[in-house]
Image (cartoon, rainbow, N blue to C red; front, side):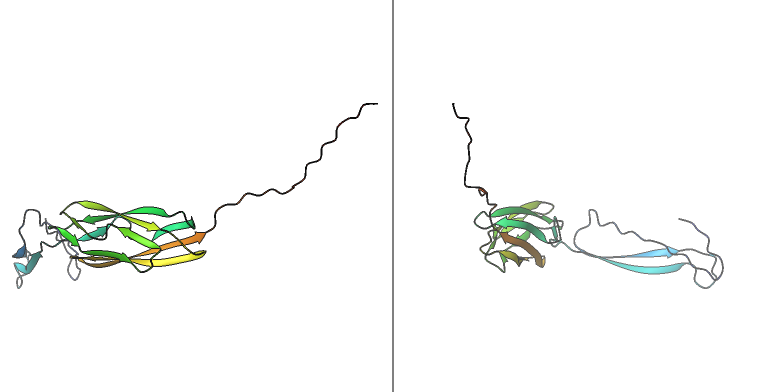
Length: 173
């Protein structure tokens, strides 16, 4: 590209490195800037690019998984998507929670490069009130934690307000 920079001024430029089709390794190149500067022409900026081939774990929803109010004795499940955006398989040897009222299935898996997998998290509260925990994902891309929130509640109840019935019948004379 071409441009003009007034004396005493500066210009920000953006360099984009495209790793498409490159094998893992270290690559060297230079950005060459030609100018009318009599001392620094051309101006050479050495660049080093390292391309790795490891897996990268990305979550479908990086926030907390919130189950809301769940009736005790009626477990509820939600799905969390895990994505491997890296360049090799993603091994996840262990997933587990810090509170037994939350369970995860499967507890281990392998996700091929560029693929995804669904993980089911189930909340089965045993007490009334808020219940929090963490889901730990131990993977070859590093450890990740997802917070889990929910509240144990009672089942809706129905009742009879008035237990009597009065009927007035016309009498015969």
